[in-house]
Amino acid sequence: MAPRGQTRQQILDAAQALFQRQGYHATGVNQILSEAGAPKGTLYFHFPGGKEQLAVETVTRAAVEWGQAIDAVLAQADPAAAAHAITDLLGTVLQQSGFRDGCPLATVALEIAADSDQVQAACSHGYQHWITLIAARLRERGIPDAAAAELAVFILSTIEGALLLARVQRDTAPLRQAATRLAALIIQEIPAVTDERTN
Image (cartoon, rainbow, N blue to C red; front, top):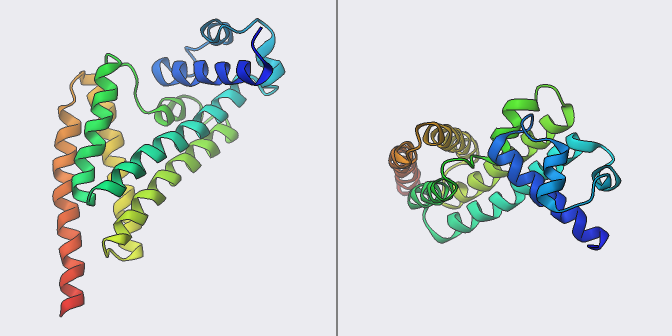
């Protein structure tokens, strides 16, 4: 029998993968336990709040994990190049999953956030975490705080929409096209700031 901590981790791993792939309502507790290789009855021992608690914890964890990946890309490239790098990364994940794995936050948010304050809050915090990371990197390039925050929201919204469209169309072209437009927009924003400082 697996240690308690390991069993909890296995349940979380299985739930996160299943929620991302097939959604909240299509994922049953028994399926989660089966995928985790965990005995029946253990889910409520580790997660007294049941499936809703699982959704909150998996969304929170996914937000951190994807945030780390996004920030790592942003740290290595200028924001315009990073737009391509991020969409390339998402496109690769999508293709490798057979276009089944979309954004782990969006899949849950679209289904249950309106019915659960806890899940809604977790999704909102997760998205805000990503926006904050993107805005911070934009500010490093000299874009003012307010403009960086607005542009970060626009960047994330565009990529999220492109990811959904790519998943539905089973084609990464929307991601590539979104990256091209975003890169051009970011490039326009950065020189404008530079010009203002030199005048």
